[in-house]
Image 1 (cartoon, rainbow, N blue to C red):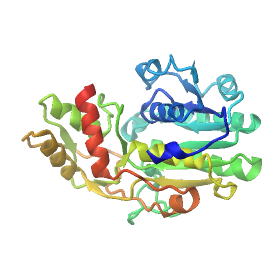
Image 2 (tube, helix red, strand yellow):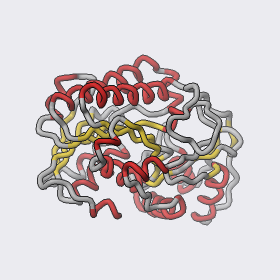
Image 3 (spheres, rainbow, N blue to C red):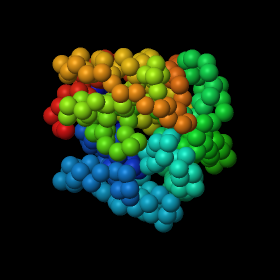
Image 4 (spheres, rainbow, N blue to C red):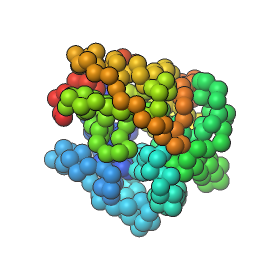
Length: 324
């Protein structure tokens, strides 16, 4: 884990919003392992209490239960903070189509609350979660920053809005913002349950339980699956990035391309299972193909993803075998 070699000023305090979630809890763990302080803010609407309990005995960890839609909560959370890693958001394209107003309030208003308070609190860096969904129906591969299409879901719209607000907060107010356009992150502690669960943990859980997963569509959709430790590296390197890179959004991926049907058969082979998948209808709002050009993140953030899909999937399988 090369990110552990990164150096920050002594006693640096990181605020991780959404710190009880999949990516947030992994960020908390990484920062604590490097010897720095973490304040976790989460309202536990989608985060898990066990992702907090595992750190509560650590002297450098503090948990705040609160909602980013409340500006007073944001002010308390940002007090004395050096770096904000803003992961708090509601995910899922299909769910956003069902709940557009909630997504606007949570993902846009909540994020602007955090930017405003970070600005007033003179936070050094504001790093926030965006999404590959901002590319919409733009057909060209690989996906490249600055070449976006028409958005396909309210979720994607919230992330595009966050990027535009971040650009303006850098331009007008001097807050150094860095957007992380995540591409299909997977790895330890990702939730396999629920109707909107990500594909890899959902497949793994069902296969380990002897059940047959359902693939939405024909399985020929492709994704740039990105192991969690690559995402940790990107967030921490953004905290050390130059001021010239502020106000920008970056593809955070490995730069590969995997087809869902191939992943399914790869998992069954790794688990020693013979089972054909079920096929269901395609999900509304989903992008057909996704593959990232990561040259901008490499150049401006020094991002150099350490884990390939093959390396990451082995680690993920081992984790789910032990923890499901």
